[in-house]
Image (cartoon, rainbow over all chains, first blue to last red; front, side):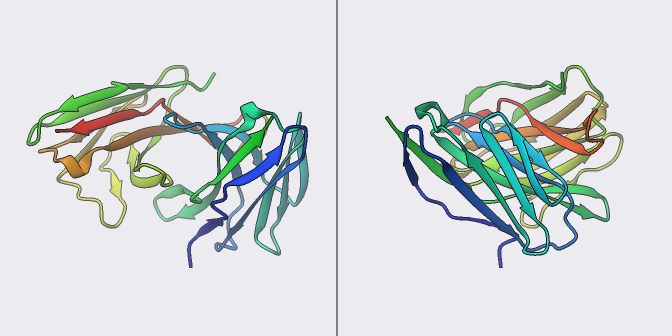
Length: 113
Length: 119
């Protein structure tokens, strides 16, 4: 079982719609969760971080975390063509020598105008 | 704040040569830096965790003698790809961990990445 799983997509949504991106993880001890956006040929940039169960909103983005179900999601409201990118879910794992961030394979999002 | 600078952004080298990539934290001290590799249309794969003043911790399957990591100061880590071969061609990305002011949790910020092409 992969440590962090995401649907690879592509997820296609029309401009203005809500895009819903999902992620599951295997380590029950994980406490920190992140969503990164990566444009083609570029390095990832942090969009959202979430540490406790429930919803966290930042502008058009809402992250949702359910530790009991080991599930984290990202909602993008009023999707824009510029949101088209690969979205990476990342989960922090505590190891003997420190923390390790494990990434999912990413979900490709395409917003059509 | 929390900017990570990575150089070079692109490098082309001949097979058998060595290439060094630098990663600097510009406005914070990074006790831990991470090196990732990403092949086309694949996710980020952690290669090693670099701790200042100590040996790097390599992920399973990553050759430590081929990918030399040095973290001599709190603001600089280097990755040297030794005796590079075409299969080493990839996008190498460094990142550094800093403690978020509001959250108090460690957050990872990435350098711009270095695209290595080995001919």
